[in-house]
Length: 232
Image (cartoon, rainbow, N blue to C red):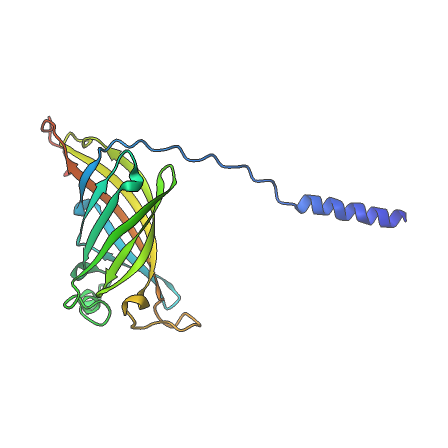
């Protein structure tokens, strides 16, 4: 009996030691102030990047960048969920890190992959914005690639905004980061589709990553000094 009690006590002690420590609730992030005014903004193509990545033969995520991006943001500073955004990507600006003796960028742009001649642009138009935190939102919209339109949801983070440019230029600025995913098969982009086993082609899932800045003219004096570097 004594031995049995000792065993039970040891098991109970071991179980107590292996229980996960209680999780301390993490405080909600503080809201980042919204300094940019309500109004229509234009996407700044010089400070915006749009990339797409897909698993390449199970080895890594191969990243493509699109350098020709334009768009507009109708921003509601009082109620950001009432904002809307549209963007257009020029397919013939696709840029890869390939440096071999082929024009790999042109091959992807002008083939059964993306067909820039027949479908020169991809577009996104938001249909709803749902706030998910002090600085985050879920933006749902329609994305069109190769003439096919399908829904996409982007997880968006509001980064910062300025009522006037920090360098003194008469523009308001606002910036966001966004992440989402599409299935390329939805849009008829089917080359090298991997099998169910995986690792023998390029994945159907394509991750979309966006870093975007928008600008809007505001009344104000010209900057008192010119920046030493081309910051604009």
